[in-house]
Amino acid sequence: MGFFFFFFFFSSASSMAFLKAQPHKLQSTHLLDLYIRDYTFKSLDNTIKTGTLHNVPLPQNFSGVNVDTARFRCGSLRRYGARVKEFHLGVGVSLNPCAERIVIIRQNLGSNWSSIYFNNYHLTGYQLVSSILGLLAYNSGYYSNSSSSAVPFEVGISAGEKPITIDFRNSTRMENVSGMRPICASFERDGRVTLAKEISPLICSVLRQGHFGLVVEEPEPVELKKKERPWKVAIGSSIGAAIGAFLLGLLLVAMFVRVKKRTRMEELEIRAYEEEALQVSMVGHVRAPTAPGTRTLPSIEHEYLPPSRRR
Image 1 (tube, rainbow, N blue to C red):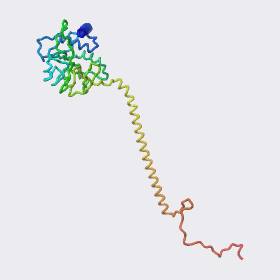
Image 2 (image 1 turned 120 degrees about the vertical axis):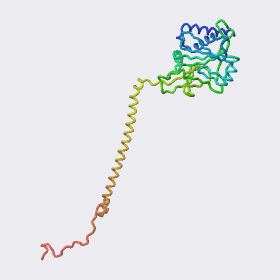
Image 3 (image 1 turned 180 degrees about the vertical axis):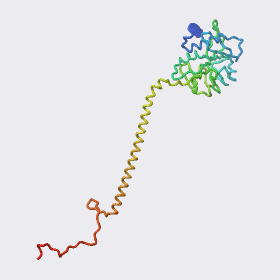
Image 4 (image 1 turned 30 degrees about the horizontal axis):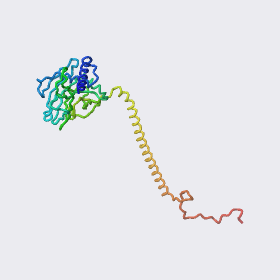
């Protein structure tokens, strides 16, 4: 157990020494949480009332980061819930482990540190449009640099009957993305980002403690649009030409069928007229007109004889 406490104090002291020396070169989000935790517990004293928010002073190197904290009794928090700035914990919230009291820390990382935090997650295709808000809880043991009687450890917060809601209306920057619907983003400890829809405009719901923000899809670069435009025009032109050729072919076929049908009708009409004027009969395999027989047959005059036969 002694080794366990020594390890936590050593890691905490190392993180604070690193942050004091090079605060803006911080690359680990977990170290940032440890730094805020240590300054929060250093600012606590017994005069702070339970359930009352207390602002945590931070060094000037972290200007723009706003941190508030409050102590809560575990039983009261489960029965009544609580509102910690932008976070609303509903009735029945689950705390694990929690024996008597906890310290809840609310973080607003501001524009500069939110960007640093967001860049650690490599969420491509999205743009951060709000400050990253954090909600973490620790056991309420007294903590100082000279005391090793209690080491603050993180307490898990899980939603109960209703989800935990986050109000981003006072920490959102939507000037350059007007008309776009933001998406709720939960930044997990393992490096994953979970996206979800808002439950109402600029209001998100979550199931546990952590860090959260609003993102929108990045607009397509103008240069990329210009490069893709000739391809789109070529594809569209090809499709349009194919459809036009198909319709023209249908029109030509219809006209050809109509002309052929009309020519056939004219031929039938002419043939019917001719057959009505002349009697047609078959001579072998040929249709030929025939004239009707005459009533008067020609007769040969017997009185005429050639001179050689005259007597």
